[in-house]
Image 1 (tube, rainbow, N blue to C red):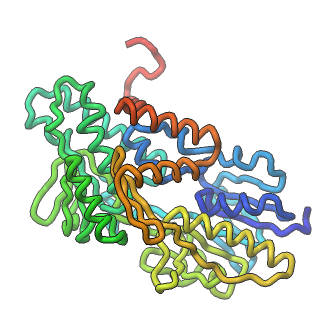
Image 2: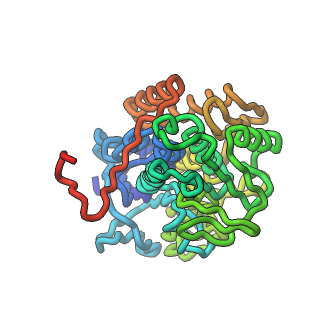
Image 3: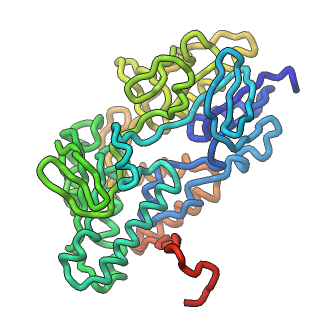
Length: 425
């Protein structure tokens, strides 16, 4: 066992898991380190936030994925620094792990562009905790609005502001519109559907920036048809507890969701290598950092250029392909074979907007509507890990499609001082 190469993978996201799965049948010792004990399917976090899915539907314990693999060790811990010279990572509990190969896939965090105080008022969607926090804000606001008789007093609780019109922002705004206009409102007797307002705020001139213009326009049209007010060319000036300040207006609401951009994990700072403005490490053709051919960076943390010289997007397919590529590279290197440089195969992009509404660009083929939505649904179910998760998500989506009902509408955070150990009220 001691003669086996020691491969350390930091991060249990798409890139880290794909690398570990591709390496688990090899003659290597693999250590997978993550500060959370589960792999999270982040593209569906917004559905947890809008009460369509439960957390367990889109997350699976990392130990369960590799439970039958004797050469894969899982470590729960946060990596705080990397010693490149001695090939060692340091964890927050003062432990350390040596490596022969290091694959860094620590992911990204939301970028508030120097305004960190906004974070407490406008959570992003990167973790289950984020999603549950957003879900509870939405549900509590509906409860508060239902208690008020004056429509003017209810208005702020029935207003929603989503900042950032990328895929996450578009999907979130569309999901909230479905809640507000169709799903939950039937259960609140004191609220009229037309009282709700959903704002999608974007500093650029298009939604889904980077998508073909006709698909971007289609997404905007679908959102507006669903009742979303799309505010383009509207950079945010300030975010407060009571709302969002724009250049010429103020949106009063406690329901603010941040989807306006990400930056790479701060762990990359300990590599002492060149980083781009988003904090991603510049890597070479084999995804290694300069001057260190056994330290690799992938996924949202890596700056990799495509054939046109543009950085690859922070998408799951990119991380998946990079993880599989590194597994092949290590296998070939250990057997003395030459390896080719990484080449990303773009299989297309897609975003869902709402029920039977989506846009897709698949290798130059552009389409929208029900067909795009069906394709989006099938692909997302396919990429979920485990039969149980796939079956549950499929069942929930079918139930929601047929009944228009959202199943997970629980407020679980107890107010301070409440009686939490009694079933009586």
